[in-house]
Length: 83
Image (cartoon, rainbow, N blue to C red; front, side, top):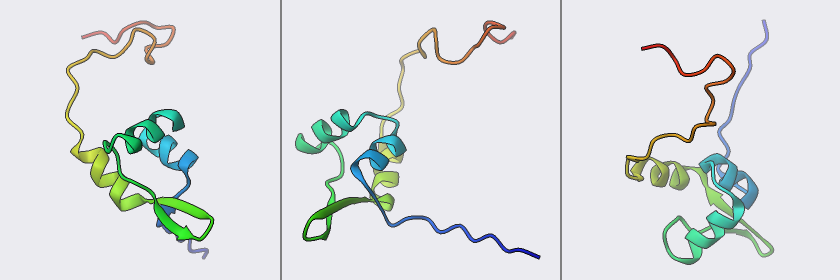
């Protein structure tokens, strides 16, 4: 029997952090600069990374949106779901 172990990463790169949050890297950098998103941590003298736990906590604390999803958000060819 093969055991598969999945280890959650501790840090994410800028690109990975933005993808994890479903935003662009530009938006992530802008929000960090304005103090609206978690700052990266210094992992080594030449490398930074975002703590996954901080990104998760920040994401879960974001307010709910009252905006409707955009029209091209995944209904596909069959149209809107039938109520």
